[in-house]
Every structure is written in structure tokens, then in C-alpha cells.
Image (tube, rainbow, N blue to C red; front, side, top):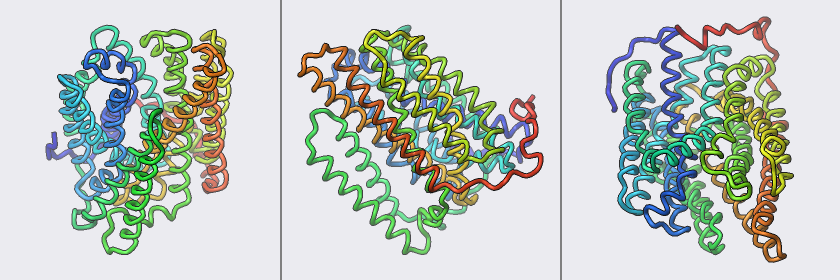
Length: 491
């Protein structure tokens, strides 16, 4: 899947087809983050996992994915981004087949770790390729809207797909379906995506630095996940966190001193690049309140089936699609990323606050639909704006690194958010149970506290957006003229 087929310089139509191909590959990766959650009870029964062991079906993927993102992005700059994309798709597809056929707990967890590596190799370079393919602001805004839809709505699509496949066939199919899709995406990429050469491995092949970065990130993600385990002691996560900080600090010091760094630190001089990645971390941390705890509320408090949970999130998927694909691009182009990002974050925060008032006997239309739609509005507007800001300071030779950085802030923010929200929710639930509350009421009380903490994360994101991000320059005359829909839908 690492074919060296030469693709001619792209026409306007082929660029958009290439975009859809890249986004299809990313959608496979994003779906995998949530499609597994719906199937976990079936996997537990089939392979006889313990409750603590079952968490590693998710954690093994997250550790590898978060650890290899930045390294993958930089290697894409050095050896060629299409080559890295195809390599990642090949690893991810083969690992998915191994997951589907896994006969034991150990094989499934090992295959999930390899799948995480493939996901990192794949997704780390896509955003950089998109920005390079669409340098003109209006088209770039639309392209980022397509990518933003995949990034924001993929989680809820995964809940629906996981419910359908698990209920209709078996959990094996949530992995097996990746095999034909992966082959098709890789083939399309060899025909549609231009094979631009990298800047050369001699321009930044810092192997000691790569080891520090990758191990530091993996240890850090592992420490965060250990904090989220209800029976974990404080000692091990603290020691792992300290080790991660030491490794990452040594990496930064090394990058500042060597002539050909793996990660040029000049990228972080841009307030927009640094600020957008911080905002994204807090935004994703807050949104985990909807994607995970909201789904648990529907299942464990309201008694929804996995399939019903998927359909419950379908309206939010449609709203995210509308905002990302049709509205975010023109709005960001006219008003600038920061002015769009602040109200988007406020929508997400308001949705989380509405979730914090959901009753034990809640009604979908009265209590669930409004907050999910509000969060979808914010995500659909916010993700494309963040991505544009985060890539704004990257040169063509650094675009893969900047892309990997955006994905890393998403994964680390999500891991931290999930650990914090799940831990506080569990502690609050235990307290309420000790006070005599019913199981459903205690669970709901724990979720309410987590929603409020998630809203607090989003407020921090708003403050960073207001005081760190730079205001956009005034738009050029005619910059917000009516968009040509044919640009998005080539024929």
C-alpha cells in the first residue's frame, strides 16, 4: 500500500476527489475511537475480559495513537506525506483484520496497539496535505469544513455504526469492515493524491529526539489513563507523569540545541498555532462529556440499547455536517477564526450545562435533543476554525508536523478529559450511593458533576481564545461574496 505511482499535477476536480479520499481515511480512524465503545460488552462476554482488562481494548489504541502522532507528522514532512498516509492505511487495515480474527484477549490488545500506530501514521499528515492542496483562503475554508465534519461528527457516526454492526451481526465486524474500506481508500489515494517528495530524511532525522518524544508521549498518555481507573493508586500515575515530563523536557531542550531538529520550535512562536492547540485540547476535553457520559446516561439511566444510542446522536451528526460543510467556511473567511471560535465554544458550554439538568426519568425530545444540537452547532463551527488557526503558522516543510500537533492536542485533550470526567463522576456516584440514593440517581448525579467540569474546560478555552489568539485582519473587498457550490461538488 505504499505504491510510488506518479500522480499528475491535480486539476480542480481531482483536488476535491483527493480531499474526499483523504477524509475517508481519516473517518475510518475517527470512527474507530467510538465504534468500539458500543461493542465492549459483547467483546467482554466473548473473550472473557475482566472489567479492568476490558479498558485496555480502548487504552492500547489511545496510547499508541497519542504517542506516535508528532513523530509521524514530522516523518511525513521528511519522506513524503502521501507515502506516510499509505503506510498508515496499510498498517491500520492489517491490524484491523487481526482485531477481527483475534482469538484471545492478548491478541486483541496487541492488535489494537498496532492499529493505533497505523492510525497515527495515517491521520498525522492529512491536515498538512489539505492545507497544501488548497492554499487559496476561500477553498481552504471549504476543505477544512469537510475535514472538520469528519473530525467532529465521526464520533457520533461511530456510535451509530457500532450499534448497528454489533446488534445486527457481531463485534468482529466493527473491525472487519475496515479491511475493504482500507484497501479502497489506499487504491484511490495512489490514483488521486499527488505524490510530492519530502524534504529528505537528512533534514531532521533526529533518532534520539524521536525516541524521547514518542516514549514521553506514550508514557504520559498511559499515566493519564491510569488516573482514570477507579482502583488505581496515586503513586504510579504520578511517577509515570513525572517520567513523561522529564522526557518531553529533554526533547525540547535537545530540539533547541541541535542543527537539524525533528520538531523545529519556531512553529510555536505563532500565537495562533500555540493558542489554537491549547483551545482544542480544552474543547475536546469538554466535549467528551457528551460523547461518552451522554451515551452512558442514555444507556445506564434511561435504558437505551446500543442502536438507540446511535440514533439518538444522529441529529447532532446532521447538524455538524451542515455547519462544517456549508456554513463554517464562509463565516470563518468573513469574520476570522477567533470571532467564530468564541461563540462556537459558548454553544458547547451551554449544551453541557443543559446536560447537567437532565433528570433520571428524562425525555429525549425535552432533555437530550437540545443539548446535543447545541454542542453540534459549536463543534461544526469550531473545529474548522481551530484547524485553520493551528495550521496558519506552518510552512510547507512543516505542514506535517503542524498537522500531527493538531491531532496530538486532540488525543491528549480527550484522554485527559475522559480521565478527569470519569474519575469525578465515579467519586460523586459513590458518595450519592453512600447517602442512600438509587443507582440511577447516583449515576446521574455523577454525570451532572462531570458535565459541569466539562463546561469549565470549555470556559478556559474561551479565555485562551480571547487573550492568546490574534485578531484576524480585515477581509479583502468581496472576500465574503456568495460561494460557488460547484467548488465543493466537482462533476
